[in-house]
Length: 106
Length: 121
Image 1: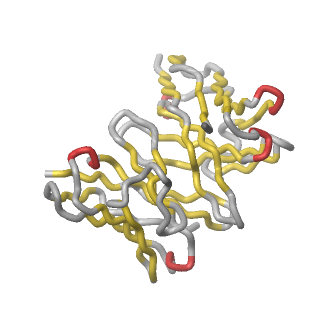
Image 2: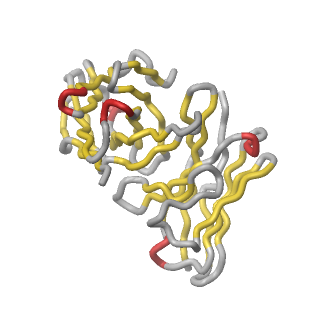
């Protein structure tokens, strides 16, 4: 079965750029989606199809996907961006999630 | 506005049965897949399965096949997740979410608010 690997945690200074990776075998050939989950809340879609933002998500959030790594980039990080971030793909008629990354804004 | 409203928190004993629900509104419920996702305390998201309410076509993750039953009643725009013999290890928050599928690309949006299930003697 297909596996997605995320770092357990990423830290970023307030106002700086955070990059959260999602690794998988030739993940560049798949469509990657990202969800933000704040403490005690349900997940929210922040990026779909590698690079697309829902209208309610700030432009500070962007995505890329190539080779064996997809990346969620959060520019000008704010305290309110502190959350768990989960990547997801569709593979062989199944949904696959990464293990999730906790983003801490210092 | 597309919304998914889940049933409230449950506290059950091991061996008991349970059925939780997820009611959709703001879209054609019978025409979009609905998925169920488990999240154990402090852990990541685990996909359990999906159902197409229009014809009740259901697909399960191998990890959950035989452990739960997913169903839907399209007449009342509601999907269900059911257990017949709960275990302590089923303690988790369960989310439903609409599966968006344009051109064979699949993502979840939106999500329900979650249902906390606690199984304890």
